[in-house]
Length: 126
Image (cartoon, rainbow, N blue to C red; front, side, top):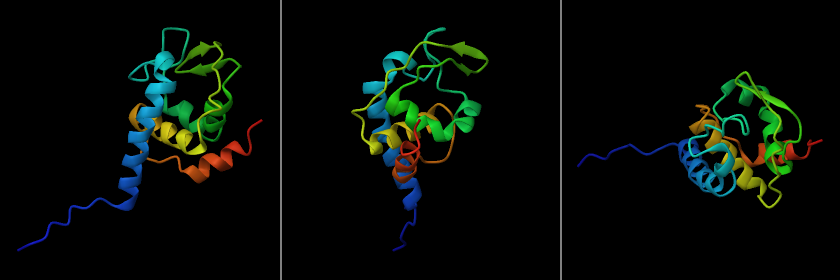
């Protein structure tokens, strides 16, 4: 009898866990404004599909989710100035989950936002 060695790596398992949990957080806290597919809402709320924005602001994303955003930003060549409320009830791990979900699902990234990275980023919020 042969054994199948189709087991996923620990990294793949963690990525899947973060993405599944992140989808739940996204649906409850982000989807109303940013859309089911991260498409945003016209000129009010930005799409979450801009890989360049994610790359340029990777360190700030945790702070934006936790504390909100109250300044004008440019995403995909479009200016947005609608304030985003913070989500101070989300745990650091919830933020890691939702950022992993958003950047891997809508932004097509292949890297996880670790719990440790989110905690570190949040300690530097201004």
